[in-house]
Image (cartoon, rainbow, N blue to C red; front, side):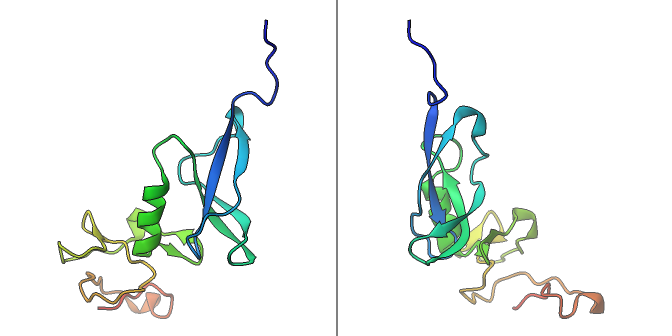
Length: 134
């Protein structure tokens, strides 16, 4: 009869840096310590040489490396944080590569496409970072 140890059911999670996009240091997690898909964790990045947010990618689940790669390449991370879908602005150009289901995923504005749908904001939002370019 085999005895179960606390090291059974361990999964190795890969982490990818939200600043440089490179693979960071892996972490072993027990079954009871698993995090949700796409979890952000502050880790030291060997490529950036600083502590930054990394996205957790497991060998199973609903969030994989291709999901991270798409979010990173389209500019969905700002200062290491993933911009929630509800905060992404609309995009009027259907064939734009940054348009994902009508939302502009280029939240970090690394590309100025000119097709962002601008919502006019009142004076209370001026200077708050909420105004958008056209």
